[in-house]
Length: 68
Image (cartoon, rainbow, N blue to C red; front, side, top):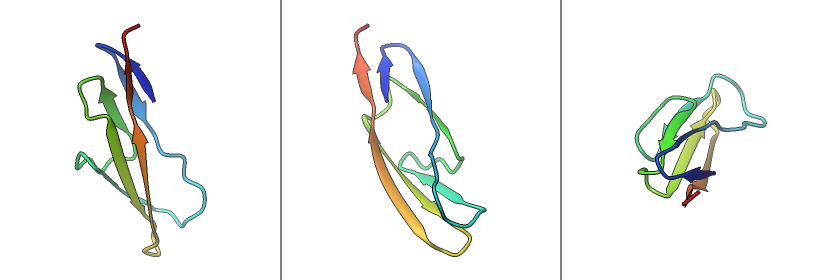
């Protein structure tokens, strides 16, 4: 995800497979399905998703800050 300075964006996971409902744990301690990110946030975020059967998936994304 790329963000301009003084802007924000929403990170929404694209889940394939697994058994709903899902539990979400973001590296910033958020537990919602999606989070709002700003240029002031850390550049790397990780997300751990646990499905109803206890299966766990984890992924990391990088936020790029641009001048324009």
